[in-house]
Length: 347
Ligand code: 13P
Ligand code: SF4
Image 1 (spheres, rainbow, N blue to C red):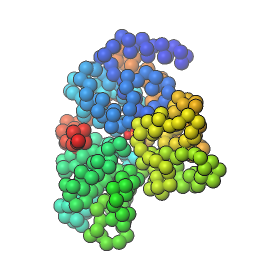
Image 2 (tube, helix red, strand yellow):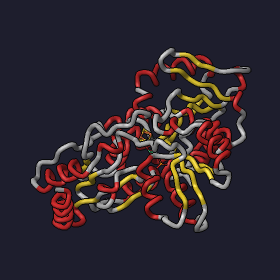
Image 3 (cartoon, protein in one colour):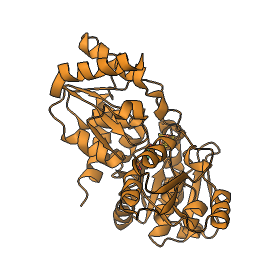
Image 4 (cartoon, helix red, strand yellow):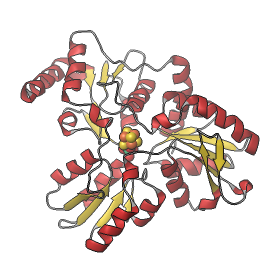
């Protein structure tokens, strides 16, 4: 039963003490997040992993790229475990390293040595290694503005992988007009742009988050008509038009803070993953909180980490037969850490 599984998780946690550390992303299920030793957005989880030198086992409740990042940022002696190997991220899968190598050759032919690559942390370790090797950095939704500004102070142009929406929203907020942005289509190996190619500053990879693309301008128009008092806050993985029409946007931690600081009685429509929206509804009964898309939008891969998988991985540790360890190859990790450190050390 659920109660038995929960009791066993608590028992193993007690047994292992500080040998075990469980970080949990804000999109994780309630049944899992209740056991996490730390919760956070992607940046905070990377910082927390980098700081932990104590735990032998890090059972990462999040998706594959987050566990890879944790592995890169921890030591050889520490083992990062992903409770379900099927917990990937469809956005991270939209940029593979072969496509990226091909794109890089073509873009250098077009623009010469004027491009610095940046990658959203939602990417494979191989993409982070490519970026690290070429002088670039990782970014998250909570530091994207700082990192894009930094990159554009280093080189004339950036290549932003793999989320076109976060890239476009961030560059637009920094005052870069849309006609100075182009989209690289990795399936056609072609650059899509309007206007003069020489003016292009931001090369966006054609990737997106399938969860956040479900929040639409039609959802916002409907709410503005029926509930004009509703404040609308969305994640910057939403499309540009949606972010433009919303009242505010930011990372998962930013959204949580905004709701925590909101007036009792205020009304909020949130455009982000369902587990977080539900948690905020439960935590703030004094506020009227809804999902911007009435269908609620789950991230299926985040949801793959459930109580049975968490327990299964913990049992394997207690038996000394660790399942699902995430080990990034050393030659990839050595380059990827350059990109991660440029972000973590950025002031
Ligand atoms: P943040 O928690 O950094 O806002 O990231 C959101 C996300 O989509 C993670 O996959
Ligand atoms: Fe990937 Fe989107 Fe799920 Fe985040 S919410 S893990 S970006 S698919």
